[in-house]
Length: 553
Image (cartoon, rainbow, N blue to C red; front, top):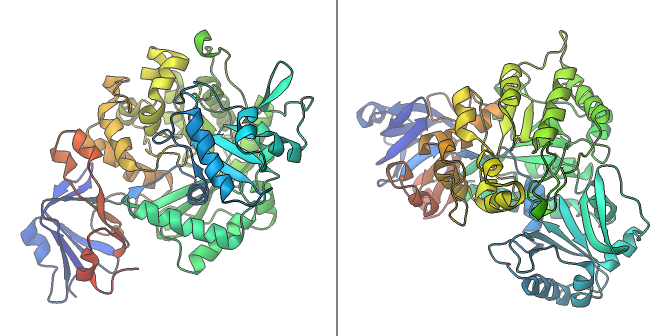
């Protein structure tokens, strides 16, 4: 029988091993032929629908291996404080005031994305400043990293936080002159977040769909939610299942349960949730429950990532915050490993990475080895050669965010010095040593836009033009490999997605420019024009789906 779809008229990136082809054919949601025009044309028939690239390029659909889809979708309705738009304290306060005018008194106002390093005041906003601007609402604004937040006085009163409230384990409440500033770090943020009314299931399903469609518009067909349960507890599992049942789950999702005492992993296990993936099978699932996440430290931009060598004194000094003492972390990793979950553990600083590596190694046993489990260290930003060697030995995968260099690289220099900043997120070293670094954005920490991320992998430039570690640059082909195949590998799905080869799922993104053949700056000008998931259209910028009648969602 003839193919359902034929793509011709431009280059098709099959993957790092396969290189480029001239044409591709799809049948029943899978690729049936790829290669030269004449060869692939034999798969076409009278009913075959056709896409003419017109000189554009097609690539495997992107995979967001580390993001928070539900918080991203919910955040689309929160106050946007990201540095692309907000550079002054006045603008922060003006946006909060505008939200207050449209919010009944006493209801919460939530904001996300401010970067104190980019604000004109070069510090975090104070509770007193928010109080003056928004006197009639509880307010919580979260720094872009997600590891630091500022609450106003109304929010702290509702939470029962006073100047004598002790710091919780793995967190800190800032005080100056004996008074609360409103700044909460790491696990201390739960004191405020736990009293914010959770979204309804309907609101969560709307957010899941909205977030997924936004990603489809950027060329993604697979994504993740890296801390399920930290917004609305067990109800998040129900919301995802409802979205899938109602056909509103746009992305193939790799789901990671929140561990830690605050998370839902223990309750979910008690209620019968088990890892539901197997080698290759996860690629077929729209909703794969695969991993559990714990935190070892915070963020380098927020001065809470745990390092052996202190932050620069000019930045505030200190060595960061461990979220848990060693034995507590080791116990959690051993428990989740024994239950069969992949471990997706947050660690950014070298001291935190050491704690996580040691804990994973302690969980190793002849009966249940860690080799082959593809445990992951999320972020894994600042590590040494010995740690890399141990990760490679055990098959532990780094899941980096090159977009951190784009958005926060200059702040890394301020906080850690140029040498440590330049050595962060060593993409080329990882790739050439044999690791499989799955590039991602940690959205909503960073913008989910993949093109600055790709650009930074190729150039190692920050958004301000600073080059950090030029020897860690990748080719465009390597960068796409990290954003596609490596992500699939981290989710046990590389046998079905991540490349465009015969037999693979037809998860395909058509990009507006063939950026492989242009200067790196062309990447920043690129858009996704068409995104297919299993041969079905999930995004269509220019109405090309009209030529694919019957194929669109």
